[in-house]
Length: 430
Ligand SMILES: *Cc1c(COP(=O)(O)O)cnc(C)c1O
Image (cartoon, rainbow, N blue to C red; front, side, top):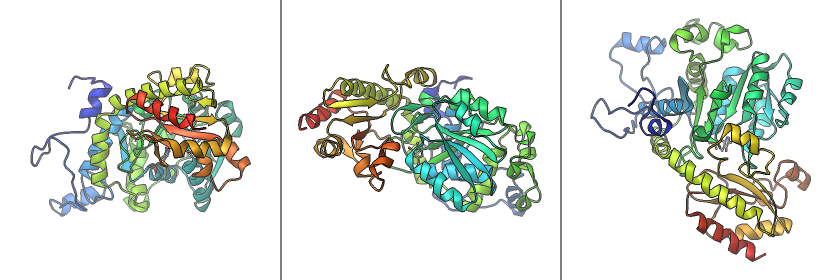
């Protein structure tokens, strides 16, 4: 490889070496729970974190490690930690950052499952989350207080093509001496690399566009290596002596001379060790295979989504379309800055005729799969008001961007003419 391989090259090669035991070219699935020690000194060094190596697959596994190295390279980061799902990634990040009584500020335009995690399970841990309208970044500054230890946003928010001003919000976080955590699931590092705009930690649901084929759950935590944990006493998990590692201070031992990867190490050595949501080697293998074609898929996803958005916008049975690739979107300029190669493949639109028309569309499409996921090679459709958001009142649905007329699409990589023809025949039935 050249010294500075480009993104598509990294997507295929980063993290992968011929298997030292067999020479196998594809990364083997190391389907094992534990690993034999060379002797008891070796075992002691591993348990003390004095030497990196494999002990038990809850902590590390070579197949999972290859995936971690690949995603770290794609995000331009020194370290990453793969876990069982996107939600597990978020939870371990906050478990490492927060103590009981701490709070975060979160965008009020997050993926619905994240809103539930932050508003419900956070309480059980004694953590707080305040939801902030991110369309004016200054809203975050106004809501800061001494207990706030992190700001959490999505680069490109599910569902409605909302792009967040990462650079402005990173500045506000850093002025306050706290970290910015960015969920980069819908953009993927192919479209947007949040660390280049000041993000300190990036999380992904690998389940979506990264794996890209709807066959495996997975998540990942990416450590930018840029945050100075020792600059304050806000993050005791990283800066205080840790009793379970003989008084080791993560920020000292894994500081600048080790690439400043204390956060990634603590997420593994404490979060993954104690909470336990490790990624299976099989899923790591499938996700890694998927990532090899990420650049090709994202190109096609974005081209198809742009064509579908333009088709819908011109259709007389459609009230509105929310997609940041449309020049009249309020997020168009932010999309041009943060994801110039394309605005992703997820969009929402409002159909004339409200709830009944929405239900009819999902029943009449043929190519589109009616299900609750995004980021598959296949085109997906859902009517949130009759599915994911059906427990809410109509007023709550509208507030959540899931009013009775709203339909969400995740555009696949099929032929765009076939995708549009399918929508067209469904719309004709109204
Ligand atoms: C799906 C999703 C998650 C949660 O990921 P899982 O892998 O389903 O746990 C988090 N954030 C976003 C933006 C998502 O789309």
